Image (cartoon, rainbow, N blue to C red; front, side, top):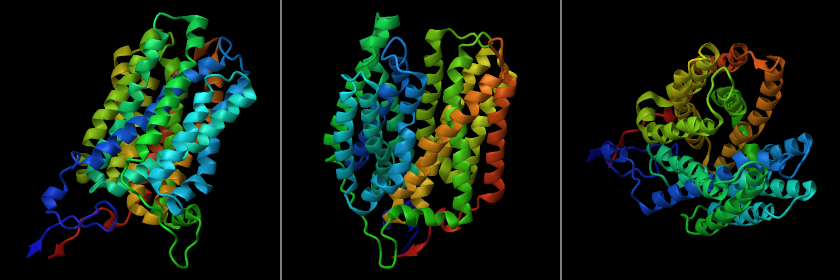
Length: 439
């Protein structure tokens, strides 16, 4: 009897026995899917707990670090994203079960950031942040790999699982709300060191929880292949469609990180006029939109495919920055356009992670995720600082920023990236099309 089933060798489905209609139904009620969701909640809770407030804590009302020292702490993720390709992701692909790698990394990384609660001198503080970053950053790639390994249909289900990460990031703000309630100025900055307790404890919780995750064994190199998973993954960039995607990812990551560098001061400027206490709530509209977009990502992917979905994600940046450039005094539009953050992240970055899992062999997927996370978490962030901070300074005269010219730069970069995808990104048909099989 012939049955139409979803049977993609490309890792988008792990079984070839369910009817086609059932295979396209997200199976998020399974115990494994629930654990993967919780894994993502905790994974991004750890990061979201310290990132927003660490900069003020290192400033004059806190540790009183110099600008150079604060910048060095900010480069810890960049360093970790580079070194992770050669070491951590290599171990996860070739040597250790992924869930045990997660447990070890979050145990040691959690103790490192926990120690930052008591540390006040720069060398020790920087050393602990670097150690935490070296262990934490690779787990972002490894958590993706674990999810893909145990989802029946990544196109349908990954958006729902990864939605847990956005929820975790937002939930991280609540402990800090109660810690900082009623405090202001130097008192609030001093109290903000509790971010390291919150982040460290949640990391230790994930270390224990990781041992309950579905077993994801390492995959030794095949005969004749390099034992270095990162080298094997990098060789795939010889394929034109992957090289184009790599370049577009760098451009989009630069724009994405640039948004977080410029948006806060823009929203609070006299031009836009949003009060300081409302800046974070306005920006959180994007996080809420991200949750909603993640929930329907599978539906869009199944109908539009990789290319169109990614182009829409990139164009989301162009639309948002165009509104910033041409309508800076229209506060209502500035607030409403924040919803495009969900489109920007889910339609490009989440789709990117799903595509990487489909396009690379099983034995190098953590390294492949790390290769692209080098751009998303490392080089893109570094490039954004090199481009947009000096550019904003150059376009500031007597304390007034020329926002039109400033935001036309990321708008143009977004359009260029979208055109590159449109004309040069041609993934193989077999990565997208389900197959007919007989039983």
